[in-house]
Image (tube, rainbow, N blue to C red; front, side):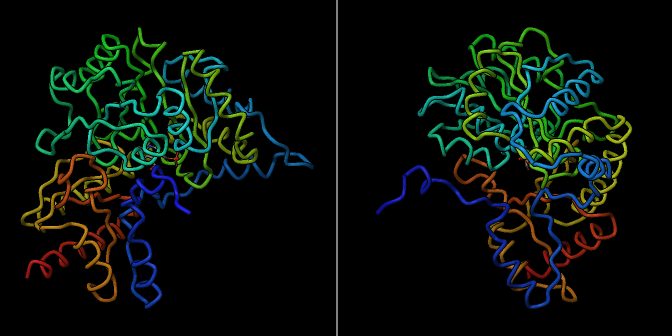
Length: 395
Ligand SMILES: Cc1ncc(COP(=O)(O)O)c(C=O)c1O
């Protein structure tokens, strides 16, 4: 018996593939600082569990396929507070942003179709698309340009009759780059001119540093029929395990058809939706508190990286990641060595090799993605270990 080419062709997650090595080393007593995965250590706001504990029911029933009305209303209010207006039938609750992206790909593309995507990109976009035989076409961005988009004509050149959409995460994972208003207008122009869907992954929205604002594509006029926003409580509210996300779009034909996919998987977990509604209902000051915490961590990571000879990186503007070029030939070998063969007083760090965040062969080979998801003292220790490890490795 042979498994499908589809599943055999999928790449392993570069974020998780070194986990077995880390687990083995931890069993031997080594402490591993996890900077490989976007799992924040920040407490999930108490309102999440309070809402679940206060939910009065004797049977945990199936929820509606579209989602719990209380959560849909909370999302509508949340966007209203940011100056955007959506209605109930514009919103579909999903199992995290991940399912939102999978359903969006299935609903917008046929097998063989293409989606434009700035690279480096969130590595699981590979999985969501290759599982349904959709091809990602990279728009290569460079560290020296702060991972901002190239010129309009360079993007337009990549469009073929098979191109159906442009997908991007803003703020960016893994780059931490925030699209400027000019870039957002360019995306809008290209999408209208070439009749493309805009899939705007905004799971890190509001995590913007240095006084920058990360706009939502929902704030732009004239793209209601083609805009699909991907949302999630995972990062913004530090609730990754809740698995609550959303598809937000004013294109009625799109949402009505995605609802069929929602119906096929019945519903999203009822209790977590109740908790998530309380998260979206929190006062907006929460977002500022979280942003300040990550900004402090960003400064620790960036300032240390700048001091290490041979390391090249741009200051990330948002989210909680940075891509750094290291003075090594092969970053994956270095990451494995860090786990297996290195420790500083019994401690080491785990990073994500960045090659898997690119689809152009050969790019990212000497780069890693660092997720600054630990509290400041731990972050300082982890970065000290990385600095010492690089010195040893180069010897
Ligand atoms: C850019 C981006 N989009 C979507 C997701 C999926 O998040 P979730 O399924 O937890 O909502 C992630 C997770 O790391 C991400 O970084």
